[in-house]
Length: 265
Image 1 (cartoon, rainbow, N blue to C red):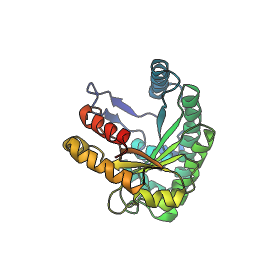
Image 2 (image 1 turned 45 degrees about the horizontal axis):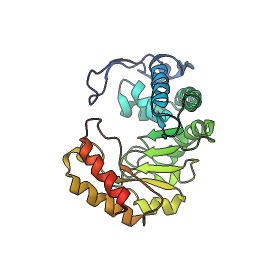
Image 3 (image 1 turned 90 degrees about the horizontal axis):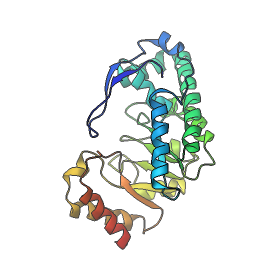
Image 4 (image 1 turned 180 degrees about the vertical axis):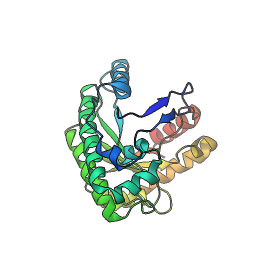
């Protein structure tokens, strides 16, 4: 919607290929203007959501992915994440303008998702780590825009926050208005029970993300499932991966995990 172009993938396990990014410098950030969230690629996503809701009926929970403005910014920059962070530091006024435009757009899209049948958001960011930004930068470039977007659907039944990466600034998200927290339970990040104790909310985790999950055996994943259940004493836990998994992950692996959860072991 802001000039990004891409070539679609013909393989569900392989992402699209970016063919053109619109932001070369701070002046390009200043030129970003509000866009229609019901048009273009996001319009296609809304139609997909409506079709999924119609197909599964009213009782199957659906949460719909939205990326935080500070996660979207690197996607628009020709230099990716490094350029986006450099612009935030060197051109704060233009960066604030761009993030404001993105947050307004995301608020409208979030409301449209709930209207189309979503029960809430899977709201994700991937730059709020100690290796990428300081705590003060997280408070400036992450938090204000996140709260604007999440506030637009605060009454939705289930909003989930996913903070991607290692050494995340977990304390900065502890009071976010969400139902559950998702992150990678790897060295440098909180344990499941630590995050629950810090937030009082449900936590999502216990399993590895792509590509590791597809390389493990069913027994390995069941063992991880049991450790997560034990750590959380069987409560406040939604078993899930550290981040996304490929759609071609062998289903027998997931079936084994589901059986272990239903058995309560």
